[in-house]
Image (tube, helix red, strand yellow):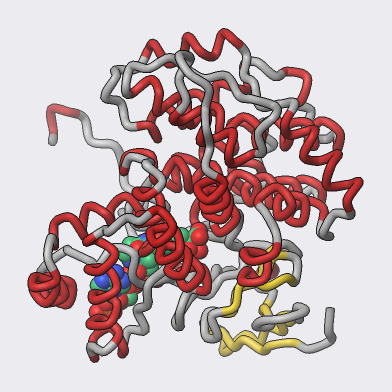
Length: 430
Ligand code: SDX
């Protein structure tokens, strides 16, 4: 903390009020002006969309949008994507340090031994239509976990919070794969403890009881990197939703279900599914200019999906890693995907267009991820579910950080522009 203060002068009937507001400095990034005491002076701040608002203090992830920097507990995402793996990154996000060999083995073993779900949960799926969107299923079944795990919902107990975290990280792939199997009418596959996290997920997605699963290490590594690149991203919409739900002391399963719901929208995690649909609609590089023109047309609600970001006003480092991974995976699998060529050409055209340059619109994490997921055989409807699986650790890490600091309930105020007080009018006089 510093002794720096900001002076706010608010005009009033008795002249200007000069208010001294404390300034807090972080390790990196902008200082923050603490406006908490403004209420006492009869004023609120106003920042719909929270463009300039820090909702909390956190030590988990840092983003520099101007420089395209993303750090998890200080480690650059590029280094983690190259040298680490998803569960090791989960340990880092939750505990603040990279694990040593013993700590990593204990963490991986704990996750591996929590991947099964209660047999009763399997019957939940039968309540959905076969064509239900997998995200609708995930919202339901993840929230329902709180009906099964009463032994880990005392959120004041750090041990309960840790058990809930392990259960969620371990079971999300199982529930996700079940939502896919249900949609295609195939039997659910039980997790296998002899497979690593991402290979196990591919086994549960594409295996069947009639023959042993053969999981390609290339595909498993690509899947793991996808999960890792989606693990956390500071105070994004879904993480902020989890924090707000958690501030009411709701159980962790309900909070994660709220995060899944918020992630679903096409402006957020639903963008990866929308990108592939957009690339399919474009269909050929010759039509790119037509779609770029639509994206620039203020009268057309169409936006280039996978482009732009509230924070990144330079490249999204995850998009760069994802683009490189897309090239590698398709080359190793010998797959020619027209959408990859369209995506690369679209990026070139957009990044040289004054509209996108002026508005600082760059490809984000969702722009290339769909190309890889499609190469892995993941259906488009499962893309946002994959995002949710990867992001679960980020949601849990932020939820735990907030609860551990016993944050107060989040309760924003508003600018009221409705009617002033008026008297009720009996129906005969309306
Ligand atoms: C994720 O927050 C996170 O960290 C999210 C995420 C994470 O890991 O959790 O990074 C994951 O959600 C990535 C974003 C995925 N969404 C998309 O790709 C959908 C397409 N992009 C947008 O809708 C938009 O860019 C947002 C939602 C991502 C950001 O919206 P902002 O910051 O509120 O920006 P804005 O809507 O105010 O746009 C600013 C200007 C506008 O033009 P003007 O009104 O100023 O004239 O840029 C334009 C917008 O019209 N614009 C776009 C555009 N994105 C913004 N124009 C065309 N195509 C686009 N994609």
